[in-house]
Length: 94
Image (cartoon, rainbow, N blue to C red; front, side, top):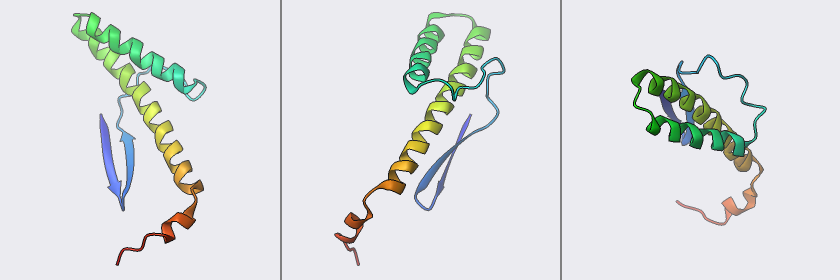
């Protein structure tokens, strides 16, 4: 389960307790590997008819998606902090 919080125009994504217990540290994986794992798990989710297996796959998917969202949020924040702020002065709205 994800909670989306908006603070003065800054969107933050928080995950509440659906981390899969058998998935280790994802920070060592490349973005492409995380994305590939999400695609693989999504395919497996729709290929099975077992409710219990779907629950486990969904928990794993939530974990990988949260990691990808965290990386995208960090990249966005880095981009916003390093952008050329001189362009902000070109447009003045009163």
